[in-house]
Image (cartoon, rainbow, N blue to C red; front, side):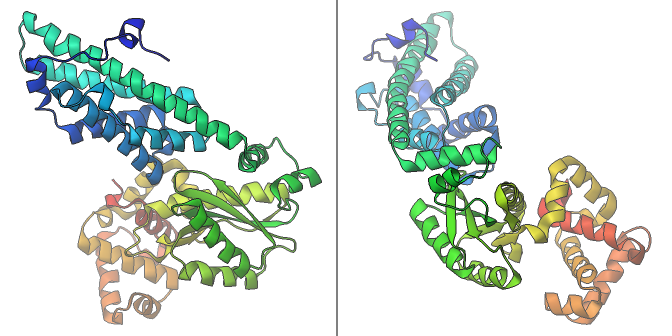
Length: 415
């Protein structure tokens, strides 16, 4: 998409007059950047709202663009001096993730619409006379479109160049083939195994790894592969810092291999979510889906208090992952089941933690040991829970345990 001809052919040396410069100096640049970035994220990339690395790169790009436009309006920057490093970094990421250039262009026009509306609102609020409008609206608008035209030309070229580089690499071929495997277009075959350098008819275990660079991820995955005595691995980038790794083993996975992997994961520095072992191409797909669901639960956990926040096994959070498929209903269930105990305050949080430990271990002594509390403290908190909750606790053990496990994920009083 391109702006109207009049905008793209605007004089690159256009300058705004004093009134617009003075008004530009009143702009809250950080606040405006957040507004624009939120609009782009919601309208263009709703499926990547949970990808912290992607959002960080988008925010950096938007912050740079908004800052540059404000400086142009203030007369402290010229188009010739614009150096869009953040925009180029975002273009690289978009290309690496296989996002089309048309989506990249739409990113800019959604941002322009939000930025121009904010400027228009600021102009209106300043109470201008009719004779002031050309200086406050006409010239800044022309300059805004000239800026976007220049930056878009650069980032589109960068996106295209990055995509061409990817197309020339084996990695792109592997990514294309993996996409066909995951959406059901490819079936297990010797050719598929050769292309991926991985045996698709073996046993598989998928892990979602959140880490920085590919080099670091590959190093971590090599350690996982060795611990699990896997004979092969394959890696797929899912987000800016999110990767899916499959570990392949001809004989599948027994308890010994999983326990060895568990020890290595617990000692590592990466955040990892693990699916369940599967066999063949269906198991390859299913293990990935499970790992992604576990990762969704993991992102909601507090790493300061929950041991599952660092390494999350799908088998441990299967119930939460299932119920969170309908988050609104899950929140309503928590409120209905816990009532006043769902309140977002310290006393209720301590009672919930103790109650969940009691229900999980089956005894007050077990709860005390797991939490490092005196048994009398556990007993007292269970009595407090009985006073807050309707009915007899022992008759609703399953319902309460489900509600407490969900509240741990949803947090915030489940409101």
